[in-house]
Length: 196
Image (cartoon, rainbow, N blue to C red; front, side, top):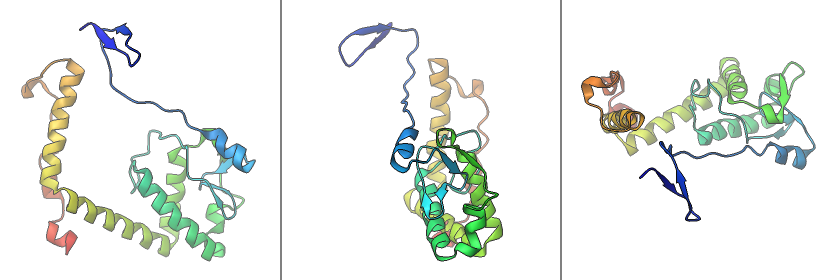
């Protein structure tokens, strides 16, 4: 009451305690390991040399087929690396060519390599197919894990909990912002179509 007890046993007075985590990006490790201070927006440091860590998750991170999933992003760029190694003449200009934008490693953002991923998907049929396969497999995994109806119910409870957390006490449904996704399961393909 009136604060929180820290791990060392000390008491910290507080009106509000917000549970969250934080971390610091370790951009200096790449520079120390490779001697490179810039990275191309494609994640390449140089031809056949890719760096897949420590990018800032910025405002458009959710506007891609891999969403905010670091694992899905790594899967796509692992496929990209293999394809570029096998087909450098087809993909090199997009990934490490002279026109590829560069940025200091410490200022990398998801937006940068999302734009390059989009360009790869638009310009190369093999990359487009790999991305489509990846989305298809992720969708199957999602359906095997939780039906759209079950996900909706969990998401609706999180919506209500968010209102309670922001208010500091329960909020009646008529006082909450409208939940706009009640029909979302009808937007989804039936499980038999996704899972076969």
